[in-house]
Image 1 (cartoon, rainbow, N blue to C red):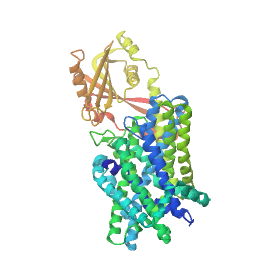
Image 2: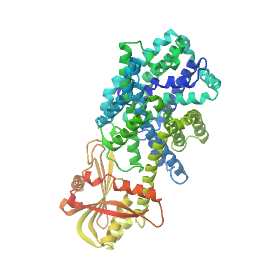
Image 3: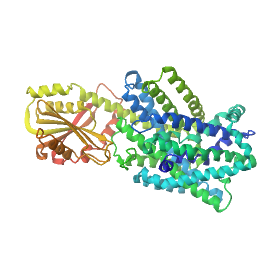
Image 4: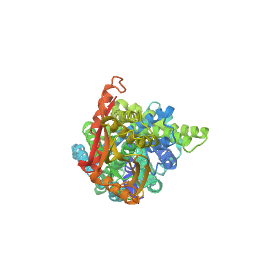
Length: 616
């Protein structure tokens, strides 16, 4: 619970710094707006976070992982993303890309909103807010390699103290103006929207800021699990947030002139050392707030790699007990650069707040649609129940998203453009990989037919062992490589091994957990090798283990073996299967993909790399 509190709830936990005052400013001085805004925020937290995510959506994990791509994996296993279901796959990719865009803007707005509190302590410190935020963010991205487990151990106590402070200062204000507790009645929020006219759109767009960390809760599920996250929300985060938002409304009721103060949150704390300490704690909390989205982006990136929507980046597991705790250096660098550019470009949290919300509410809609499909296709609910549930979820999500659209020209276009760039990259990579696989499968045969042709002597053979390595259990790719070698040089080894490498969650540190060796006629072998998720498998060692377990049926000597991998070389095709810009983008990514053999313990002199000519 404490670790989850430190990593998962930072974003949503620091929303009181700016969400209430922004929504109140959007009300344009409507009488009783403070109580109405508090009512809207508290009920939005309950409906979106508690009911939608904690109670419903987080039950749809995939091997403990959460996020849009976890829902995609469930639907893929059910066979629903083929044929007419392809549109949903594209829709889910767009949703994941929106969360990438939100992951860039969340750290920037969170840290800036906290360090700007220096002005509440000493107005002369205001010019230092932006440089201080940039320095803090740089340090945050530099320590990501420590892993979310270690960071959570440090951040957890800080966030616990932060939530205790939120609840404490809020409760102190409620005691002085208990009438604010009427905000628990949702009619106060609805009447504010009815009275606000067109201002209601801006109010709802600001209320979105209170739930911007909700999607990160689901994306981070693989790091700590649903039970710990749900308990932390139910017993600590939600009560503290509700008390603080009600407390801010109570303060405004007592001091109406504070409604226009940009540092409303810090006014709840007495002047002097306590307020200075609150600014320091808020800064620490917003640094931690950034962690929720950063770790969520790591999880989404890893899932995208597994599903074939991103190239195989280097992924380092940072815990041997939780497979979901990972660190991806390239993603960390790109995300860090994006955050710093946003801080320097917008320069204030008020400007960034206008750019905030549209990405995450768009991702919420995608999650709702995907969850509705899971309920229908995977859980096999009756159609009418699934449609009713989806309608209820969208009844909350759509108004939040449409209200966020009102800020499109005030900066919200930035995360949308970031998300569009990510979506183009993911869809281009998937399209290119599909063409690669279809090219490899062209003219391919099954295992039994290949074995029969080998036994019948259709191939010239030499006295050698050749190991064709496949990172995932796609036997067709290895068969295509064998046929391509025979086409090119008219000869293959007299012992052919198809090695399928599969990560396993059973033991983090073993590189040969479970070996399944199957012999086919004609000197053909298929070796399915599971390895721990924390290690890069050592292929020669796996081969020796398989030989020792075969009771003499299978013989392996490194000096007589060549290890074969395929690398596609993208060429232009007169058929124009991809537009020129997309072909060039895919070719660039393909050339720079992580070279697997460097991490498989293969001696360089025993390695054969085939360039697979692909015309697109």
